[in-house]
Length: 312
Image (cartoon, rainbow, N blue to C red; front, side, top):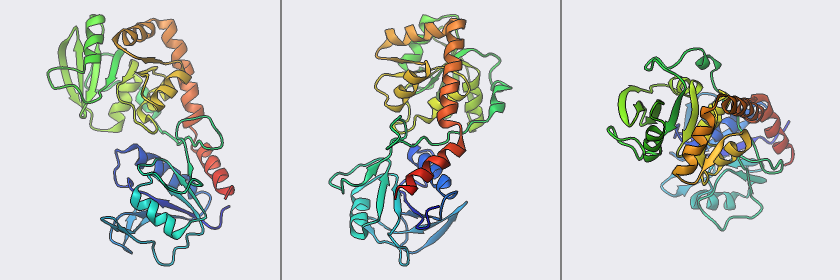
């Protein structure tokens, strides 16, 4: 038990779709099992805002930040993004220890320690819990009457009448296969470069159903910190295919029996591999084991966070 508590300093807490918000909330929740947690966010200085399990404390805004009165900095501070303003504030109050997830500024104290959200180094990695609802496997998405499609999570380059180029290549190369593209909360089904129909993706459960019943998930722009959607697909046993330069997404693909691609030729080769039932089954089993072991256990995250805090 860490009696000093943890202070979470978050720029992205309110950005619910941001990976840093997802990871920070996950770590903060795990920390509550170990010690008291305070959450500081930009906002009116001294103002408190209820937010589920936490009361958020405002520390100022527009570059003018101040540490809350009565809150001792003799603690471990977890920062989602070290900005110039956050770096200046922390340098002034000198916390006992600073752990951070990302940085958009430099020149801060080299003793501050970065936590990797996708890695194997036990000294600096923390694997957040990525939940999925296993019931998504029971029923396909209500908008489509077929399964076994190539699911493409778009990088935003598509349009209502034209899929992203990667999806167009897939639809052309495998003319008998369905390709489902998710972009801007719409899932569009293509076959032979022809648009068959579109349905809304209104909830996370909608997305999970699409993942759970796909032959493979091609994520064209995995998240830069966690690659959350890649992990979710793997937890449903759906192999992933991602760009080789996609950071955490590529880490997950290589470690889980998935595939990475540099160009269209690589993409089509990987997709062809998973159209073989035996190859797909082996990758499915390996991917599920990988994702469940590393990101499927909330208790393991609590244990890891407790170990980090005990080092203080």
